[in-house]
Image 1: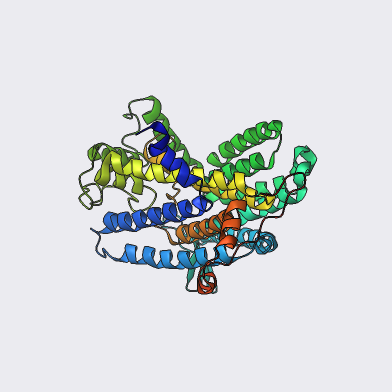
Image 2 (image 1 turned 60 degrees about the vertical axis):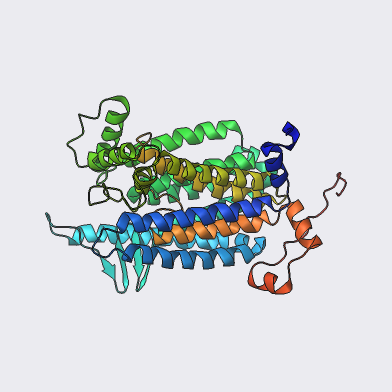
Length: 432
C-alpha cells in the first residue's frame, strides 16, 4: 500500500469531513462519562452502600445530558444575554457560602468539629450550598458563567483588546473579585479560573505584556491565598509534601497527614504496571486511598487498568483539546471563538491539575477529573459546557453548509438540535 493510501491519509480524510469536530466531541465526552461511571462504581464498590455513589453519579449524568441537550439548542445571542446575570448570581452564591462559613466558625465552640451554619432553608457546608433540597457547588457554576461573561466582554471590545485600558475595565476588577472569593476556600478552582482567564485573553489577541503582568499578579495572589489565615497550615503542608517528593526522597513528610493521600496514590500508580490488576480488583480502594472516587480516581484507574488505561484517558483529553482548538480556529463569530477557547482551557487545565496532583508533578488541589470523578455539580456543569461546544461545532462554516445541504429530518431537528445559521459571506473573499 502506498503512503498516500495509508492510515494517516484515512485519518486526514475523516478529519476533513464537515462535521468531524461535532462527532469528535460527542464521542470523546461520551467515552469519558462512561469511563467515569465505571470507575466510580469500581472505586466505591466495597463501601457499605456500594451502589449509592454510582446511582448519584448516574442521576447527575442524566441531569447533565439534559443540560447538554438544552445548551446545544440555544442560539448564541441567548448566551450573551444571560452571561452577566449568571456571573452575578454565582458571585452572590459564593459570597453566601463564605458568609455562612464564617458564621459556622463563630458558632462552633473551640475544640469541636465545625458545625454547618444555616439561614432558614439555606445552609452551607465547606464548598457546598444547600437551597432546601437542592445541593450545588457555586464555584463549579462560576466556571461556565465566567467563560461566557469574559468572552462577551472581549468580543464587544474587538480590536481594542490590544489597549491595556480597554482590557482592564471591567475584566480585571471583576475577575480579581471572583478569584479572591473562590480562592479563599478552593485554591484549585481559582487556579482553573486563572488559566481560563489567560486562555481567553490569548484567544482575544491581547498583548504579551498583559500576560507578563497577569502572571506576576497571579503568582502573588496564589502566594497570598496559600498564606491566608485559617488556610495556611494545610496548604503549606501540602506544598511541603509535594516539594519533598518532587525534589527529595519523600521521607521528611511521610508521617504527616497530608502525605497519606500522596503516598497511597503513588502506591496505586506503582501497583498497576502496564495492564493493571483488573477492573474492580484494586486493593488500595479498601479504605486505604482517601477520595479514591473523587479527586484521586486517576490513581484507581492506574491500579486497575494500568498504563494502558491511563494512556486511553490522556488520549481522550488530548482529542478534546485538539477538537476545542479546531472549533475555535474555524468558527467565524468572535464570541463563539472566545467561549470555545475558554471552555477548552478550563477542562484541559483542570485535567492537568488533577492528574499532576495524583502523579506528584503538581501539588494536590482537590480538583475533580472532568467527566470522570464523582461529583454531581462538576458533571452537570461539564456536560452543559460540552453542549455549548457541540452547538458551536455545528456553527463551523463547512458544518453549517453541510447540514443545510442535507438537512436532518424535521423530527430529528425538533428532538435533537435545530439547523445552525448559514455563515455570512465575508467581504473581500469569494464564497465557496
